[in-house]
Length: 339
Ligand code: PEP
Image 1 (cartoon, protein in one colour):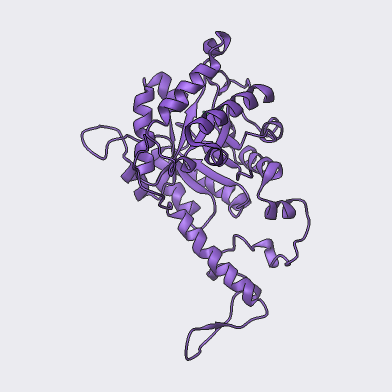
Image 2: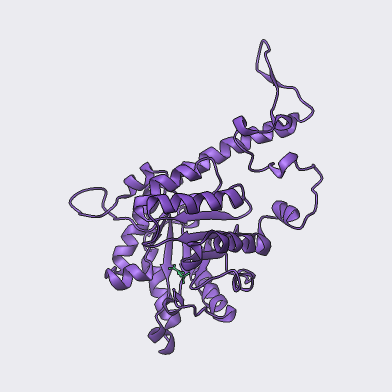
């Protein structure tokens, strides 16, 4: 089963709105059109709007670092799902270990956030993982099982593929200590087994499980090559454009979708790439080089495409529409519970 890799940057409490714009611009300039892997930037709330403006029309998506499960009300300092959607946020991190540790978030509270995200067409990135004491005490898998099962309580079979799970051993976050590939793969495979028990193999195979914890360009290729590691949730290395871009490139090399891997490998597909290699993720029509501009001639009935690139022009327009649709978060089935 090919799962599209995902690299998400968690900026935590770093970057003012203007610093965030600078970082996002550098990222977009280098990889804004990359579609063989999913890329998500999660700035602090105060930079969501300005970073969102930079991401407009690009394939990089906007994520938030938290949300409150209630719709609205007297929750000073909190942010609702509706507020996030209003800023075109498509993803949201929930249950990060820093929220569990410093803000006392429980599995039950985190579960409410997961359900609220899904009910509001936000894709939750549910973080799970053991502390050093728990690992040394031999309870890693039990802790991960509790985090996964409690976090997903009430998530339906229709909703589960919109959930992204991030395995983040707490002892590896921000410490420079990274889990070995064997340690990470073991827990990822265990999470996949849990998902199989809960939702069946076909759905479990579709859920992406990210690794988080001191992932850097140097260790990413080995981690991302593991069978059940579908990307990374990146803290420190997402704060600097060079390292984040390199991480995305590692994910592309480790398994962008096959069509794109051809390009990564420098091979040419049967249909030649259009100028600028912009086939799947073209620039907006107004910025497109003349040889990619579809010519439209007036006609009595429906407009007809008349250019030697006719098929390509139609594909470009379709991709444009898809880009725009994916920037507004896509709706997925309703929140009816299955258990
Ligand atoms: C994180 O906070 O989710 C994280 C993985 O941080 P870092 O990459 O800095 O360890």
